[in-house]
Image 1 (cartoon, helix red, strand yellow):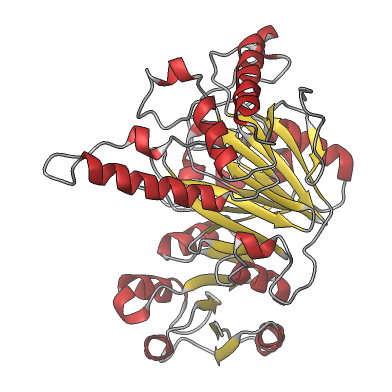
Image 2 (cartoon, one colour):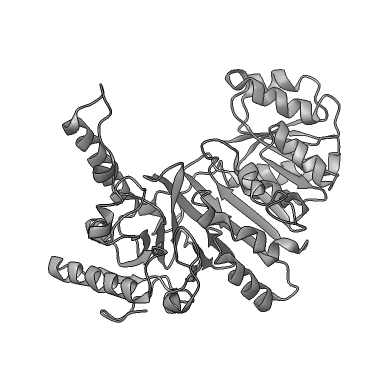
Length: 447
């Protein structure tokens, strides 16, 4: 049973949150100010701490103290729930070590939603396709739509009209949940579409960031729903190598690069750095895996009653990209390790109904780009066949590939499948293409 510590001198807030979390399976500890809190955290090692900034012996100093001594206090998730809505307080709290900031009034369910995103463990991919741990059905129905399919840099123009020139962005709807995979330039038309569809109705959106290379985040400043204070947007991803997720996303909006700072966006935006490999978005189980790509890149698998969707936007096959370092394991050992990693990746996508996967190069091009972090269509098809995938979408189209080249690579992929005798359906991701998760297209028909 996970443990959460509530530090707040507002009895109504503490009572409502404690009752809600207790019913949701949390062990709840309560304290009305920060006196003695460090000893309490050291002894109880809670999974999470929910703290008001305006309590004695608490606030920014408490956040910093907990982060300074991880051996003593562990690594609890720190959520600041404060009556101040000033952007500066939010920024200072995050800089002091908080993982998230909620401006009161907030509901107990909002607090639990943040906690659930990192602590609750979802079923494994194999189990998730059959329902939650209790045997109930997963939310559904599920649909997905491509808004950006290009890699590296956006390439609008007459030669990319068919498949599209926007960079990575895929929308997945599961019941009432709207999950967005990456925030490349394709998120701009998605945002406009959401505003047109929902009007003034508040939006609750979750954005899953695979990694923070520009072609996966550069559309975020142009995402219209983020400028409406009625909307609540959660951005989830892993921290990365050098900077925290929030600092990285905000940096691209600093002056002189952009006229509006990230902290000035009126939408209620919560950035959450993931720590577990499985979590929930609402009641939708999400599993993750790390991919072979420069920096920290994440693959996602979304499990629903209608089937599962795996998203591997940027990856390179392990055996071809990894070579032994001097004075380390020999070539044979390296091949064994790489083969194990490749097998683990195949198990992650095993039986997925839909696989969206990096196919930036053809086989000849890949020979000139070994070590660049991207795959060729031949290897991606082979992986999909090995894992028993139902439908595969070629993704992350090279900026130098026009529509004719992508269509040629699609034909090559289908010929590989035909020669293998596999039942895999292969399509090329195309902006605007939309489908139900459990629905398959007719063999041989391009989307």
